[in-house]
Length: 319
Image 1 (cartoon, helix red, strand yellow):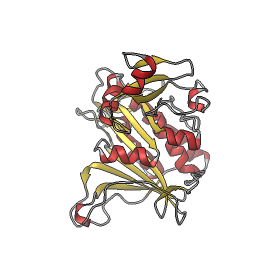
Image 2 (image 1 turned 90 degrees about the horizontal axis):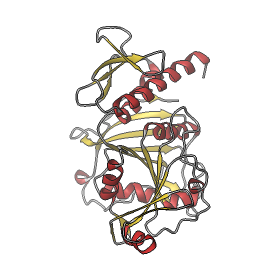
Image 3 (image 1 turned 90 degrees about the vertical axis):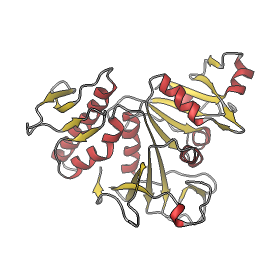
């Protein structure tokens, strides 16, 4: 990547971070904006050529004018994460044949470095990132934004029975606020009546209702929203993303398909089967190229037009 392009993409990324901060304000102003010299958005006339973003009265960001190439693709992909309304987005990286890891659990790395950078960008725009305890145990991730400018999100780890090792990075590194979510019954058994406790190992324990072995994910989102965490990024693994999708709690779903064939392994999405193609979910989507990976960015609030087998935007490359 040449220096001129890098500077252009850096400017577009700074614009996205500023858009996210602006929309978090108590009363974000609608209008047209560009990036000011202080790194924050500056209001500007709608007819001014320098206007880059528009915040509508409904709190949704849209480009104020078309931008070329990778810079336009960057804004198109990430602007949905910068709006005012609560939003829950999930991501899975998988092989062409639909697996997120080998049978032994090895997933390092299914996707290429461009998609890894994408995960860090999504974290930087999110208020909270959610992963299941299985992903923590298998990959021991940090869930930080160290590859891109931006603030670390609150890390939310789903561990219904509090069985996760206290030695994992998210509980020891102190790099970001961390919530360890268990069932309310387990919280009461361990910590008494309130269901909340601060543990010395670096995470706040939160109890939420559960149904059997699964946490009540709707109650979880309500708890996070009450804390001011409105932009939620569900990063994995496959079981956690599948449960959010099956519960109808996702606004967007991103699937990054790598040029890799495993033959067998741990599947990505695991949902109840449909008998007919017409009954299957076919959301409106856009397609972005990230190195050798192809990202399907699906809007689960909108269905693709009837009979359209290839709905979506033209391929756009994102670095």
